[in-house]
Image (tube, rainbow, N blue to C red; front, side):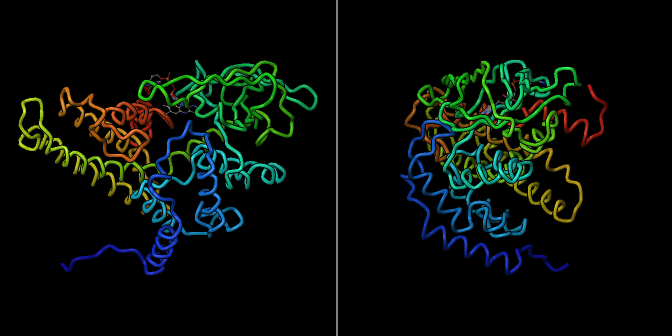
Length: 400
Ligand SMILES: Cc1cc2nc3c(=O)[nH]c(=O)nc-3n(C[C@H](O)[C@H](O)[C@H](O)COP(=O)(O)OP(=O)(O)OC[C@H]3O[C@@H](n4cnc5c(N)ncnc54)[C@H](O)[C@@H]3O)c2cc1C
């Protein structure tokens, strides 16, 4: 049988070439891209300028129309775009929740006034956002959230607490999910409010992470009789649940591409680590267990990429794609396990912060990247929740 060569259509390759030429001429140098930032809502001068440049050139959200920072790119072209960005670890925004989750939610559910006030300013990095979903007793089971909003004339009065709210202390606005009908079944009485973080009665308290104690991103956010104008209700009253699901879907859609490239980078870093001495003083590349593990990760990284393409191709043909339920779990756990393998192999040297990890993150050391990898399996649905979804929706097993 003659060999079949899978390739992109000429117009898609032309799209790639145009994008790469633009990137080459415009992307900030590496030392600027890697400058430390204070949180995931910390829009520094260079990052505002970069995001605006992407917007103006139609390279911020390529699938959207030109007036919203895009160029009506096809799904295949969007995938090419995300691949080229992931390959080079180029961020689109320093406020990923604003661009990746909140802007699409406002586009899908906002009134014309809300779109005018919030959408383009978010895309142009003029305002930064945080996402108020999780609470001390509502994480995986988000529908049990208790932050209460009572409609009183032209305002909602908000009381309650959010937690893990990334970047809340630097955000201008919060897309916050609140309970507006406590008597309705739990998925039915939820609404989405756009809350100005400067409102009296809103207090963000940042707290440190284990991996980088100097980097403050997480917050507890307290609401005490905070008044929110009625016109800041996003979508319909009591009908915020579909918005929460849309928000998470936006978060998950192209995540596999990042995971696939991070996994490949991890494999290359493990191969390089082979020259380091292991616990017994011999180079790690001579350790059979280490070699087996690295070969296993090379297979995982390849499988991840192919599974992503397969899911995408089914989506393009309008078919359902169980791959999408598998990719977040497989991707985030592969990355986590590969960083763990390097850490284990290094023995006592694993805590040496001069040993560099595979990713071009703020802190390049292997140990910090390994510690950070623990959080990768939590947001957007934990690994256990992903396994429940696979068991029930893909394999058809009964609910536990
Ligand atoms: C880096 C990072 C950034 C985040 N940013 C934000 C943000 O900006 N805004 C925001 O609102 N939230 C944010 N979160 C919070 C995140 O959404 C929650 O941590 C997540 O939903 C899990 O909720 P939880 O922490 O309350 O854990 P829980 O839901 O209490 O889960 C605890 C453990 O029990 C397991 N578990 C729970 N239910 C089940 C079940 N039915 N079956 C099997 N196991 C189960 C979980 O998998 C987990 O291991 C962020 C989290 C991280 C790690």
